[in-house]
Length: 255
Ligand SMILES: [Fe+2]
Image (cartoon, rainbow, N blue to C red; front, side, top):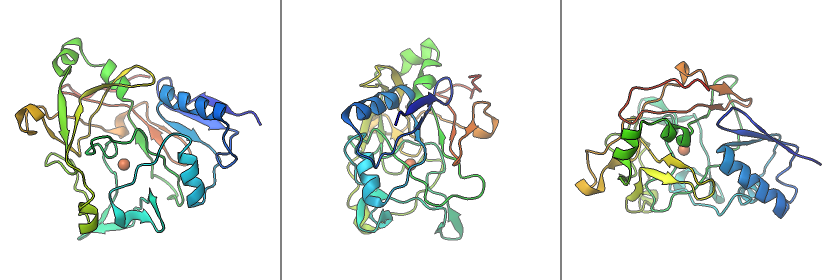
């Protein structure tokens, strides 16, 4: 069967239809999907059904698997799969995992290139996942800001004191898995599409390695999807937006 890949917005996201990732993905299709991912940054592959082993196999269409640090959140029997739930609590309140903008596992020396999500149970409304195009965020910076941040690095720790949200405490077993802080360029060049992108994580960035990993290079990064005209909804709920604010007022891009 022919499959299609159609852009979701002018700059971010594409929708794939007519493909079953459980069907044995040919090398040519695999290459096409990976090229589309590098070009569009978010792929929504419609009409999939996975058991845990099938989900693991489907993820390998895009690369090798990365084991999540939080062992207590692994799908039982499948340490390669982490589950996200809105039914967790921290003392006194509900805990929404991943509630603010972030990029996964940036505290690792070699973070994964992508995260793959499969909705198992969705609320009747809400529950969006929002994405920010960090190539666009970089491109929109002023020349002076680009020059100022060129060559800067940031220290990423598991939980920065600057984080806009708390993370649930790690179990002892999980805490032992946390690696030494990752040190990453603030501006990275994508190895496949060749474009520069900001590499930020407000949850994890602690500071500038030139200053003992603290303070002065902490970027400000704000996001408010509710006011963004580019926010779109894709059933099942998943929304796209772009950011950002690196020492500048937040802007509202016009598409
Ligand atoms: Fe995440």
